[in-house]
Image 1 (spheres, rainbow, N blue to C red):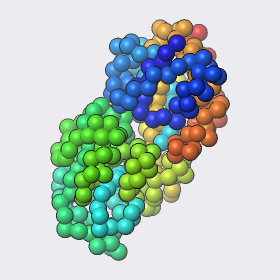
Image 2 (cartoon, rainbow, N blue to C red; image 1 turned 135 degrees about the horizontal axis):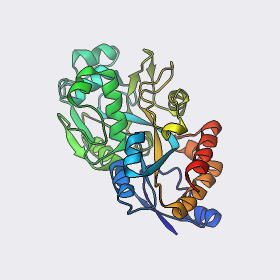
Image 3 (cartoon, helix red, strand yellow; image 1 turned 120 degrees about the vertical axis):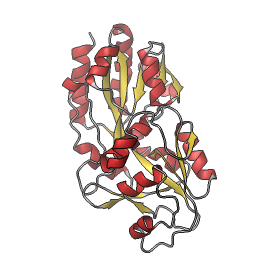
Image 4 (spheres, rainbow, N blue to C red; image 1 turned 45 degrees about the vertical axis):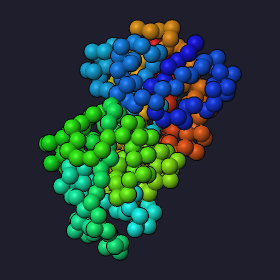
Length: 309
């Protein structure tokens, strides 16, 4: 059986031979973004999809879908500013908001300089880079901005696709990473693994506790620790702007989506994910994703028993 995976993180892909040997299941991986994952499972053209934006219970009911979390990770702003030290820039929700609204136009803007008093910011125009495709990464990033900046919430909002006010669009995390890597004085947002793989300079952020934090495994884990993942709500939850001194403010889960009526297919899917939950934690950590805690995995397994007969 081939399971088509419109799913842009890859901790689960521990090696096709390993997966096939232990589960008898082959994976056809398609890096098409969360919007594509939602669309294809809704249209029943794949066996399961995935999204970094959880669907609301009423949306799941309308499309007759099931949903459970697989792994937790972080979205990070990345910059290409040749004059400043690697991973040194500090921003907060308001400056991020105004940069992506096109209101802060120069890197030496007083609001940026106030957050970086020890860094000489260049008098260079800012190039914004965003995801052009439907993306759960965009959903998490814009949900974060909506929670920290009323102007953003009122004028743009959040979702897998929004109407950007300025900038260049790149397809996929890889497209944004490549644009930022090639474009001096740019800023974009990608999953943390893409920032590391492309050796991009990440931004530190002031979180909801007023602390300046760097993106890493521990800050993602602290943000995830406060999430209320309730199986009665099909695990619908946001982890942005989470409380906690070390919490990374742009954290989210990747969710797996199943067609409710596809009982035989779903049994194969959960066989695969049950194996991955048991064997995949160390690989997830190596790729800077946070495995689900045992308590949440137990909830997911009970969810499978409830909904997949």
